[in-house]
Picture 1: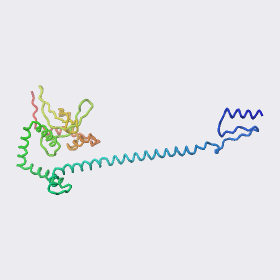
Picture 2 (picture 1 turned 90 degrees about the horizontal axis):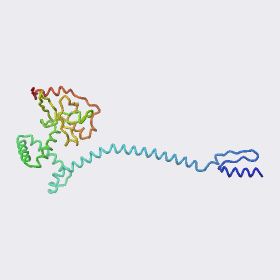
Picture 3 (picture 1 turned 45 degrees about the horizontal axis):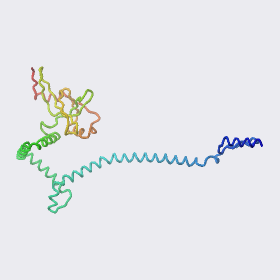
Picture 4 (picture 1 turned 135 degrees about the vertical axis):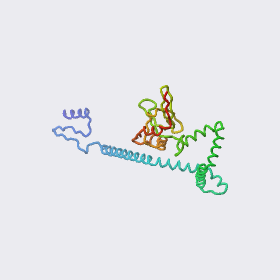
Length: 270
């Protein structure tokens, strides 16, 4: 009778499931797998499913981003090309519409042919004189003269085979402070007269907003670094925000560039 009361007190103090108290005769039974909680296998399966879902989600996200990275520049290229074709086609397509001809792309071909013929005509003596006369008329207009002058300078700068107004060379200078370098274009050279003589300076145009806005910095010719890249490659670097810049830039010998201009300027001695 006393042993039963003792076992009842132990069950109240330690309410463990699956644990059998020793019998009065001294035998003890340990908990078996059948006595384990029924929810343990389902919890393991659920955690395994969650891990699998996470792996699949990570794999799908990486592949989706890879597809976006590959298709984004292709889509932008096709979109801009399609927009450009529509834009150029809109110049002459209304005339064909009035004639009852609705063929897509005919206005674009006509515009390209017209631009080509204008280039051929302006290369002749008559075209050059007409262009000079038109520029003279535009320069007399107060507002249009500034727009035409700025746009012409940009178009001449990026056009190959132009005269002295084009970008001469690509330059790298120390600007705006020590330890920092700026990417620019040499537009001209000049001589700065001093009391003890003269100093040859390079006029370097440093773009600050893509290509049509920037700073003009006068730098000593000896302090200008000239990388071994063309002006067209330099313009691509500026327009792309530096993404198309080569991994390694090789500087050319500045003495060779200076010697080619040695006969142009005579530095006065005072």
